[in-house]
Length: 426
Image (cartoon, rainbow, N blue to C red; front, side, top):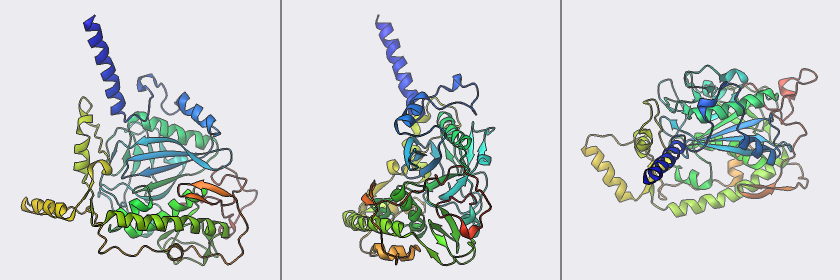
């Protein structure tokens, strides 16, 4: 009898270890998958979609957060707004926070990317793969280069976002079903972290802060509207939900642009709440310093997960698990110890000192900097909607979903495209 109990305990332990190895965010038994390309989504996910009033083939959007190590699938509901349907723990990503600059830098991309059916790779040697679309128009205009940057399986990364095979099987199925429903382009938002006031304050001394402020405008647009923003590139910068008075060229100066009045109003309300939270976060940080860990330090945190697995399985963990806030004295002591050992100061160290912290921009200043002009026309009363920052004015939603497949009745010039029509060319 005792042997039976021991055997049962070992069986349970093995099952739990399996969940841990797959990061507990996918549940398909790969040994029972006969056709990975056409494998249907698990019944649990289908039931969750039905509960959220999401058609099975409605459009999706993908959101990635490097620091938290998360990949989220957002899906359109019947009311054309998007809601999160599944969150996955990213198994491995290489490099550090910040965008990819050049081939071989081991950086995973950051920015806004457009994924078409051609980006799906059913024959990947990493089980299944989805090309991120890097470099996009912004990357190309800024001289950034690199090839084969993917979201794929195998849990091993060299500049990609790598998932377990079980996870990529589901992610691939989400994209496949959306394309079958007529979606022509899935928006990928690859972000350094959740762009909250607290996180922006913690990373405000980063060399990438200006880039992050720019892509945060797109992040904010989605938070307010719960619709993937219309993305364009001009003047070597991203623009979001902007109506252009003329042709838009990635490398050329931006034409005169405007923002729909209701969106200006909603973002203004959102940013006022952000400003208060940002100032509070800066005060709370005081003289604390955030130490951004290296990839090796992230791997060390999750080294135990590799036991009993194939050599290719190499989870990297999250920056939040391996990084930490430190006092000035603790940081100085660590740097002196590293220098004594002949190690260079890590380039990923982020300082969060109030002595050099810039005054947080007001909502009006940020809107001007990010090409969000103040509306001059009277504002009509609009309903309110709950967002991550509280209640704010809702942006009018068109009848057609901007990512749904709907061929235009007649060719439409670039300058006359409807504002909410998502641009496939990115």
